[in-house]
Each structure stands twice: as structure tokens, then as C-alpha cells.
Amino acid sequence: MRLALAILFLSTPAFALTQPNGTAIPSSAGCNGGTPTGLGATFACQCTAAGVCNIGASCPGGSSTCDDGKHGTCETTMWHAPNDNSCIPSLLSGLDPVADAKTTPETFHPTCALTFTVVTRGGARFGSVFGWYNVTGAAPQPGDLHPMLDCNAAAGASVLLDVRNDPAYKGGDIGFFLVTPEDHASAGSCAGGDCCATIPRFAGGVGYAYYSQRAFNPDGGGAAPYIHLLTYLSKLASRKFYFAWEDTFKTTSADFTNPVMSVDGVECGGAGVACDTGQKGVCGGGVTTCDGGTLKCTPLGGGAPERCDGLDNDCNGVVDDGAVCDNPLEVCVNGECVGRCTLGQEFACSPDTACDPMRGVCIDASCEGVSCPPDQVCHGGVCGTACDGIVCPHGIRCRNGACVDPCAGVSCGGGQVCVGGLCLPGCSACGGVTCSAPLSCDASTGACIDPSCPNGCPAGQYCDAGACKDACDGAVCPPKHECVMGQCVPSSTPTGNGGSAGSGGGGAGSGSGGNGVGPNPAAGGNPGCGCAAPSRQRGGTTGAFLVVIVFGVGARRLRFTMRE
Image: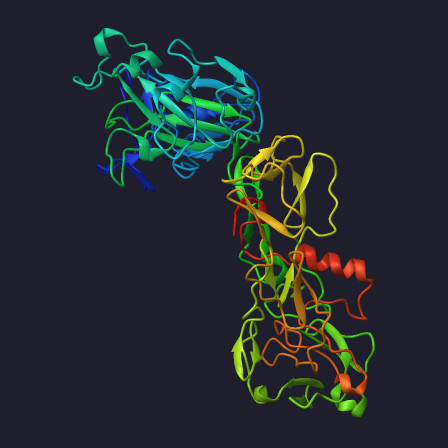
């Protein structure tokens, strides 16, 4: 709670966040004794050098220039316009208390040692306790509230804690809390006249606890509990957050400086999960990473000139469009360069297909004259995706008609693990991948494992609730492929004539999802396949295979983060 201050306010801007009662948060800057107050002023004094604040001097009317407030490198800069409020600057840049305010993330992953610091207690009357708790899915009990800064910690006080080595840490994500000594019967007053909060007092029914997980806050309830914490990602330091609290029940104050804490070394939860970047083709597959504490989707690869490999290399939404084969007598079909069927009997089509004279490729006879959208192909006269009808083995996903394991053949350095084709820091490393339930981190390897199978599972199997199951169960591989040891591999049993190229706006290389490609086997050609198999154009099998495993990731959770 703030002590009584003489406060002046500018006109209220448009706020994105409001309390359940409609109060906009955080409030505009105020003034106390000729000095601006509020979050903007607080952040303006968080600088790389001590004793510096980026707050400009007042600018009387008629001034031709005003102090720009830039006295150092700080989170925020506040400065005056001519003839504005002499105490409260009207201009601001950098960390914005309004635009940058968030109520998320609500949980954090402690992969690095944490430094807790009191930035300010503002005008708070309450001596609150700040600390952390294990995230379990339920409101924490008093016994799982672990204080870091007590009621006597003044501005500038800090403490270092390696949560990962704390016996109280249960693994996984953590949340943060603020415990106050507020009297339940007299809002804004200290219970029993004692303004120092402690966990034992709270356990005895004195005061309130507010959490980074807003749903557990005691006021408001339901779908819209009161907001007591705003989070800000530092613009000066990586893995640093500011926690701006309001400390009264059904808070009537809104400047969120009661108190402000900073925490260095926190990573957001959720790193190491496959994601969709929103881009097309190979640019669409990504893996979540923590960048300065913010979760983002990092692409597994960027755009490149189109080549005949069954992938959309240039990320324009069309597979193999304009891909040219080295041999002018060949054409790109489903990621492979094959002889043009217009060249005669040597490359004649199988009986159930027809030669498309415009493209020089064999197509499903029922697809003659059928035009499909760029991201679809024709099967049996019907347009569909390249992966229609394909069910890949456990932990693997279909991409452009092929079932691929993006980490196959990828070797990572010490302390790293392969995630979606990328080598990322292991789960035990600072800034490493996150293990999602039911998996836990194996500190010795940095990999996420299922502890319900302590001895692991044989190759080609996976752990499910303590039992090893065949990864091929339920799998439907692309045509001319079979599931062996959890992988879709070319079938050892011939299945008849080669199939046809896809028909549609995506071109012959749009990936038929399993139709055989290439010349008629009766004419001595290879039956082909619907996977992104190496072609004669590619620079070696290994390089081509790596292209497939690096970019063959869809928008999904990776194998080690979720059971399927």
C-alpha cells in the first residue's frame, strides 16, 4: 500500500490491461515532492551505471530545446516537452510501463542461478515477503512458499539462489509470490499493528498471498481474479525480468510499485518444443527457444533456391516449383529427377497412369484434367495433402509425404541434445530445453526421459506409463514403405507398378504422399517412392538426407516432450 502522496496525473492513455472492476493498470506517472513517481520513473533509474536516472529536467514554455533525459544507458528514458507538467515528463522511450506490461509468463524455468533484488518498495506501508514456489497445478500451500527477500529487505537488497540445487525444488517450473500482513477486517491496515509479513503468520491466517499464477489469487476469483503482478522483460539484460506488484486485497492502487523486484537468470518455460513459425515450406518448421527469457519460435532453416528434393526450399508455399534437373531429358517429380515420359517406351508410364504431355510426367489416370491448389496433390481424382492416409510411427511426423526423424544422423557436442534437428543445450544446462510431464530431466545426459521406464526401452520401442510399446503399432507408412524398428523404410516386398506424380498447382514435385514416382518398372526403370529420396541431381546421399531431417519437422511437440 502507498503512503499518502501528493499526486498529479496526466490524461489517462488507452490501457490494454484492466482490473475486474474496470480500473486501468498501471496508472500514469505521479509526482511526489517535485519528483516523478510510478513505474516509468522506477525503470528510468535502472541503468548500467549506479546513481544514474534518465529523467530530463523540466522545460518551461518558450524553450527551443529540452533536456533529452539521456544521462546513461537505462531501461527507460523520460523527458519533457516545452511547457508540459513541470514534474511529470510527457515523453517516454525504452521499457514502457503500459505497452510492455504483461501478466504472462506466469511460470518460469530456473535453469540458471537466480539473483533476486529489491528495486523499490515505492510508498508501500506493508513489509511484504517475496519468494518462489514449485508449480504443481494447484495453489501452493504455505509450506511450499520459499522466501527470498523478507519484510526488512530495503531497495538494493539482493540474494543469490540456485533453485536447482535447493532441496525444496521439485523440478519443473516455478512461480513467484508476495505475502502481505494486511488485516482481513480492515483493508489497507497491518494486522495487529505489525506490518512485517512472515510465512508462519500467513500460515496462521494473517495477511494474503498473491501469485504469479493469477488464478490462485484470493480476490476476484472465477475467470477474472484481480491482477497483482505485472511482468516486464528487461531491455538491457538477457534472462532478466521485473516483477511489479500491487499489495492490497482487491487493490485500489494501480501504480504497481509496491514493491518492484528484479530476478536475473530466469528462463521462460517451454523451450525445446517443435513449433510453427507461420512461414511456408521449410521455413515453417521451428523449435521453441528462450531468447532473453522470452519464448520464441526459432526456424530450423531459412529459404534457399528451389531444388528437386520434395521440399519447398524457397518458402513460397509450392514444392519443387521451377526445380531444374541437371539432365535436360529429366523432369522433377515428387522430389526426384526422372526421365520424361514423352521420350518414348524407355520411360513409358505404367498401365494405371497416363503421360502428361505438358509436364512430361506420369500422373494418375483419374487425375487427368484435375487442378489442385498449390499445397495439395491429386490422388484418385481427388485433391488432398501429401500426407493424407499416412500415420507415422511414434515420435515421427509426416512431412511432404515422408515419415522422417529430424535427429537421425545428427551428432551434438558435449552438453547438447538434438531437438527437431537442432543441437540445443541439454535440460540440465542454463538456458536448456524444457522437459514436459511425464518426462523428467536426466542430469547426466541432458536428455528428457520417462522415469516410469528406469531401464529404458529397446530400439524401436517407446515408454508409455511404465510399459515399452512398439513404435510401429498403428503406423501406416507411405506406399512402398514398411515400418521397421520404429522407422518407415523402403519395402523389401515389391508392390507392383510404380505410381504417379501428383497433379495440381503445386507442380509435379508437390509431394504425392506416397504414390510411386518414375518410369514403368516393366521398362527397366525404378519404381520410385513418395518420400523425399535422394535424386541424381543432389550432391551426395548424406547431404540430401540431412536436408530432409533438418527441415522435415511440422508444427508438433517433439518426441521427448510428449507421449503420443
